Length: 204
Ligand code: FE
Image (cartoon, rainbow, N blue to C red; front, side, top):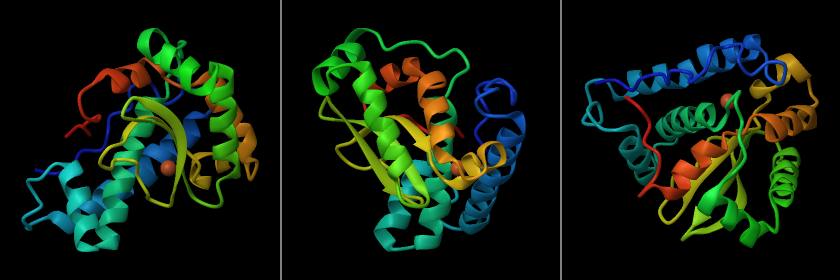
């Protein structure tokens, strides 16, 4: 068994004009694919070859295998990121909407916090909306750091590595973050994650 490259849940040009098809071709088809390819090469013929990606991440982290952790966590984070975006962005509803109002005051305040966190994150990393025991918060992780950890349930993520926006926005990360948070977040995916037992499972 090998770890699959996540199939994009929309066409490569579906996120335009906010994120271009060229960015998705490079980001998904080259950057994400490279993480997956390197991970598959590393686990081939080992006891990890038939494990899930989540199990591999925990194993690599626990054994201090930084190289494997980086490729495994980046594979998972990107799969989660593609699903965090949608060309048909809706608004939060139901239990998620109520939790947002309770923990942030309003959806606008949540978006403001997520934008600030993503824009101000130093160097490469990820900005997350997470639930810890049902309470929502915005967090960030560095490099390949993931919120796939005990006690935390990721709901949405924004990739703030330069490769997520450099083709479209050059060095202007705020333009990418603002366009993404305002137009592309998949609140249905966030609501599914909020409601599900455990965390989203990487396909393949
Ligand atoms: Fe990325």
